[in-house]
Each structure stands twice: as structure tokens, then as C-alpha cells.
Image 1 (tube, helix red, strand yellow):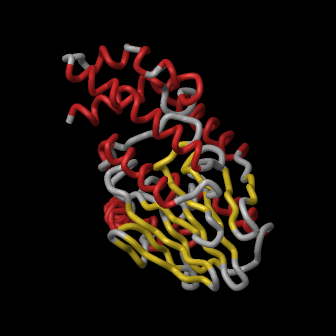
Image 2 (cartoon, rainbow, N blue to C red):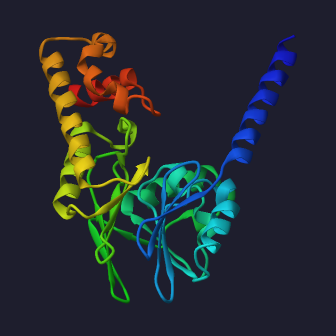
Amino acid sequence: MKHLNLLITLLLIHSICWSQEKEVTITIDTLTSEVYMLTGQGGNIGLYVNGNHSFMIDDQFARLSPKIKQAISSITDKPLKYLINTHLHGDHTGGNAEFNSESTILIAQNNVRKSLEKKLEEQPELGEEILPEITFSEELQLFENDETIMAFHVHNAHTNSDAMIYFVKNNVLHMGDTYFSGRYPYMDLKNGGSVEGYIAAIEKAIMVIDDDTIIIPGHGRPSNKQKLITYLEMLKTIEASIIKAIASGDTLEQVEKNTSISSKYDAEFGTGFISPERMRNIFYTSLKK
């Protein structure tokens, strides 16, 4: 009976995974005449196309690469010159080996490569193509025709490896997972994420952009400066409430159950990957340190 139950469980998992893969559709948002956002399963992909080349931000999962390539081919036939990872997570780096080639240069913040090197040690079959060839510590600038592309590191926000990418002429900012549009954020505390760093990252983004900037979030729909300001206010309000609860001696369990801390925002931001209870857990755990 035990073996039968195990077999049924494995078949169910396989069926769910197959169904999820089959149902994934890559959708395209045209943000400017040169910049696009591709949505599928995982982090939002940014695509910049000029007269000679294309430039891609993040690549979701390896199994989706054929669909992503097909979607890109409907936009442009320009060769992919650069691919940049916004951070280390697999739903943003999983397709690296499928897109990295002799004609494509893979770029990321230093800590992304360190993380992927450890992953490669454990899974050598992934191949060295998953590793960035160029890394940077704080900032990097690329110049493509009349476009300036700025990549800059924000410290200990979603992870310890986050980078935002700003297309100056097109006025488009890809924030990676330092912004979950329309939903509560996830701070990966085990990989260097923190509430303070997350808030500081959004404050930095607000300083860079203007009222006309189009924002590509790591997850969710395209956004703008005013929505990001509202998001920041929400984060700061919840941060202040949880700091007060910690100062009063409340335990993690008490904060998790205290719906009043986030009830003002739960309907708008609490229906995504991170539930209100889990969000309060992450905030408490980070701020308690």
C-alpha cells in the first residue's frame, strides 16, 4: 500500500508539472517602440531591440526557452547580444544555458555568479553556460546606438544579488524582484534579503525615475512611479507597525495572527504568492534581527 501511495503521488506531481508546462503562454506587452515585457511562468522578461541587436533581461525556466524564443522571434530577428540576470533565483536564471552562446554575453551582479557556481558544483550537467561571463559589483553601463543602459546593484533587498536595469532614452526601468507589482513582496532572508534593504532599493528607484517612466516589475503588470510610491508607503507603514510590535515584546506567532497590522492593504496586495500572514512573518523575522 505504501508503494502504491508513493506511485500515485509521483504520478500526480508529474501530471501537475506537465499541465503547468502545457498551459504556459508567453504574452508580450509593448512598452515603447524598442522595449517589451514578456510574461510566462516566472520573472518578467525585459527585451530591448535596436537596429542591430537585442538585449534581454532574465529568462525564466529552461523548459520554457523554446516558447520564449518563439515569442521573441515574433518581435525581432536581431541577434541577442546581451543577457542580464536581475538576481540569482531560478525563475530568472533557469534559461541561462539555453540563451547563452558564443554571440551572447551573459551579465550579472557578482553574487549571482557565486550562487550559480555553487549550483553548478552540485549539478555539473547544467553546464558552464549558466554562468555570467561579465559581472559587476555596483554599477555597469552599456552604450547601444543612442541608448544608454545602466545596471546598478541594490544591497540586501530581495536577495544579496539584486540589480535594476534602466534604459535611459526609452525611460524604462526593470526592477527585478525588488518590486512585486500589485502584491506583497518576497524577501529571501536566507540569501541576503531584508526589509530595510528592500525599502532602500525602492527609494533608490524612485530617485532615478520620473513620472513618465515605465516600470517592469519582477512579477505583476507594468507599473509607474506613482504606483511605486504607494507601494513604498505600504511597506513603510507595515514596517513601522511590526517594529512597534517587536518593541512591545510580541512573538512571531502573535504577529502572524495579528491581521490588523496589514488589514488596510491585504485586499490589494495580499492575494499573490505571499499571503498576508507570510508577509508578516518575513517582516518580523527580518526586523527582529
